[in-house]
Image (cartoon, rainbow, N blue to C red; front, side, top):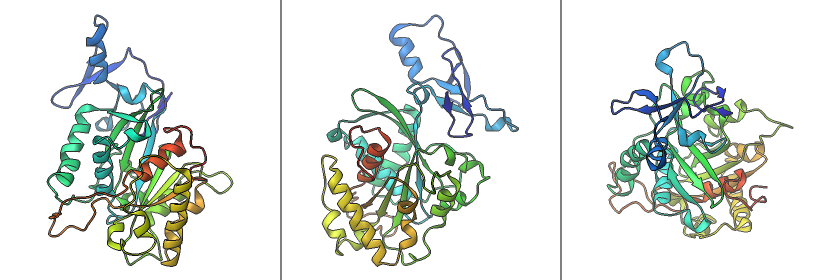
Length: 334
């Protein structure tokens, strides 16, 4: 059984009912009865499965990539944060770091779930940011919930489909908006905090919207979370940010993750930003990280000295460890 992240309908799927996407973006039945060998595998790589959920509006019909459903239940990661926290830049820098082999030291390799849409994301977000040095526009409103990008992550023995959802912060406050339907399907949370903001005491409404919406046992969430203090370059000369921001680990050290989490917690607490620590209080497993998606602030919409991401993969690696995508680190996040 697969849980559709778009509409939350749970369904069984079959290779006998596959679809292919036409150049016009429409879906038509894919018949593989007489196809075998490498050609069949190539067609399956681009095939889709139609979600059979009953819909009042036919325009909301949706399809999931075959590679998304074939490896068991996927991991849905939701990026949570207000409109100015830098979620879009952080995710683009993460995907860029992955494209450059940033997961290899951890024994992980990746492929695109949907080759065409992954290329579209790279060309629309990753390349403009990292190559053209252009500041990205904030997350746009979407009518429905669709992953921004999705990857197949392999540790040499197991493959997990990982989907990233980045929804505009103001939409997360609505439990009825179509674009927030994915929230109950989340398997990992990435909370994004702007280190440079001055309004820390009241926290982030999108944090509360997500944490209040998800079911808890014993008052706490069983969904792992990572808190990323992005734009940390703006406070890079302050302790303990200066200790962590320019350290580039090439392996996962649970003891170092714990030390950094303690330092981030203390840093936010000293700033009176206790409300931002609510994910730590409400999630059974949570790590905290100093990161910078760009290395500096943009000037007139451009990064004239280049984009130099710092530690953007650390929150993701911790989430992978806490969710079992990266195996052998049960102590991370405790």
